[in-house]
Length: 485
Image (tube, rainbow, N blue to C red; front, side, top):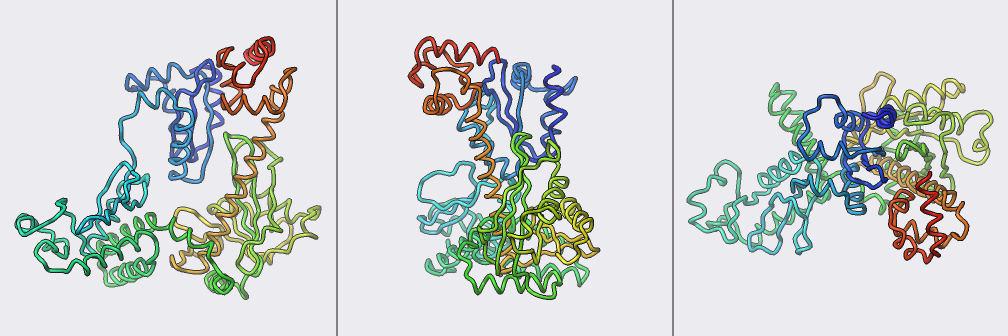
């Protein structure tokens, strides 16, 4: 382990994210993802680690690495895929084992359609749900819809009596047995369409029904059944929650007003929160530590009061500390926002109890006791409290849930746009500005062709000249300076 690698490892947080390995020329050689970045990246450089030959070869080539944190494992998966597609690192190709994440495929074109688990999503006219990082989630969802809606699991395109002869699905899995005419094609198709609607997140009442069954089983002392239902509910929520969130942009004023009334009742507020603020903390590659504050008025986002904060009191990733800074800058006595933005009736911290406690500590420090403050944990969309009450899990079809998840997603989107502006500003202030003969247009062409300063530095002289139409002298001077840096 080199001194540079050791120094880099000290800054890696134990959070979900992606990491980028580079060789001595700055070329990206591997992109990976992790649920815990610190544990995963450290494992590559652990003394005595017994890696496979290809991994050993990659590690021996690594000169430096970067990382970025994201919200969860699913986002890490999508970011990893995007980076690999963009940079095509050679070790990702060498180490690929052809294993991809599972998706659920529905084939509406079959005479008796069914569901299947697949690892490749194709543009073939079929309907896909996923892919998802967790294979058990996909398999549990498939098992549930087959049993609930009587969907066949056999692979024959046209199942018949011979298929039925060797199949026990009708007996042990509640298959509707279309192979022997126990259901008409129209009835079967209706069941299949209903199953697809459920997987698309349009039947939240089904999960509510399972929750009622789980509570009844628990009350009757049937704890194994209750635990099984609980696991099924968790899997189905993960499978369908993205679709629930997508419904929120169509929220109308009446739904929003009903949502804030539901929130008031669930949290125990004396009146519906007419003004809600939500704060998201985010950082990129361990830098650009920023926060976004978004506001909903009467349950609907109001962009007039959105604000960005560049965290200035410290460096690195520390969400609770960043949350405390935002509250102080928003509500402290020297804040300019006190006169220009409406005071919150509800303050939401995007995150768990640590961010919530940090925010509440600053409110107490400022002598503010009349702004209710909650956290929103993304894993199960739980409302987190720290006043002794249990977390609150609103029904999946709750308008109150739609209000706060929409606002949380707005906060995340707003933070991403701020990151983009910071990156663009960094590009404008890059070392390329110091090279005579390279203006804004040529700089953009170079970065578009080689993606980064490192990419330009490792490129061939003729390629650099051709990418931006540089003279031979300018291209030589550019490469000389970049490689010196």
